[in-house]
Length: 247
Length: 247
Image (tube, rainbow over all chains, first blue to last red; front, side, top):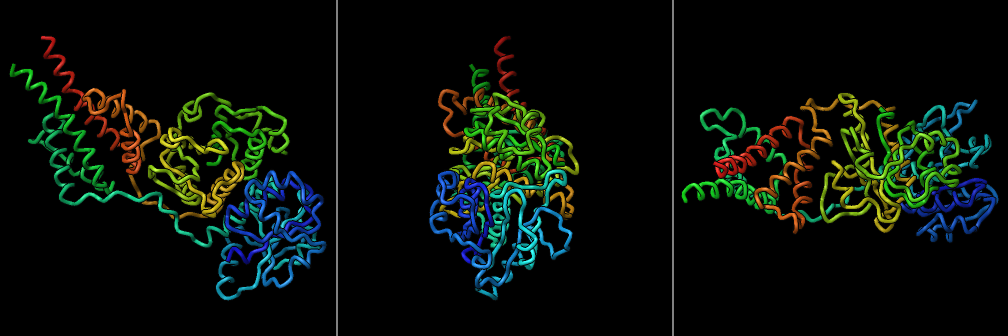
């Protein structure tokens, strides 16, 4: 799906923004960058801001006319911060991503998302070329996002729409067995009685509360071993003390 | 809610990123910027990239120590791209925004979201100070977002959480504050040293492992009180013993 989405920058003034756009796209897994009449490109500032995404800059399609960037596209959306006199079907970035994702299930034709010049945004003519306008929710007193930041938000929502599972943070250790948990709870209870935190005559709700707490943890085997080692250390003081009393 | 959220940049190398962060924040309606040991600030490049958000730069709190930026915070989250050896409770930006939004309904204390140095990200020590790590879904071959772009994504989700209605969460006890968790970890470490389970000369990975374990629990306020009571009882033996030796 992401390879089918074109990010189209129209009449970009600052080459640094083109580089930052390439980086934002590549971070989110997009690859298709189209540039309509960029003021300065290629440019050292673009390459600098692209960091490791210079392959997107090298493969960028530079065209002189918006229509050339839209050839074959099934769906064209335009990103717009300004409220226009002309009402148009509006989507927020999440709705836009959902629409693109839904379309991708039945249609393999490209989708284009247009971004206008930094100060002025998309022209009315460009906006009328779009089926939808995409509006990024913002502080009403300060609505104009940096160009590459706007691309970042849209590409992020596309990535989220793909609903990629979160990466496994790490291979987890073996979970603790029910039996070893029982031994742990007995050891804990014993230690609490020895240290007089738990009065076996009036246990109240202490052990059930601690069971709830530690069960919620879904302890791993090694963690139970660690906790039991700590309990033994806490008890150790007692044995030391009893030992010293016996002397 | 947004006025209660601190964006904390730690050891930022490029002043341009500080300016771009201020702009991204202001676009989304956030105002509280904290800078821990920025390499160069104030700086012309920061002001340039901030465009109309120079008020956030002027009001930014510059501090020399992370703890100064976290004073009074109820919840601390850290933005991390790297997969760490030590697993931690992970949220994507949407889940993080939901959590902050939910908390804001019952608690008016500040929330902090930490962003590390551009190349290296947050240090392990900084990450261990967080209750959650926030992971921005990304292209596995190219995961590292520009700092201000990462801030933009997080702030965008916060804005979306504010603009979109959310389901009511389950009634739970009040969650433990970040500060009270720190007191608990210090108390735990102290007790482990006193009982000689932890050798302060050779601490190994003991405290990080215990932090991971207890952070995973998302402890409630009353549970922290209970655990600290237990620690005091475990320490009590020592005092009893010392007392008996004095006789």
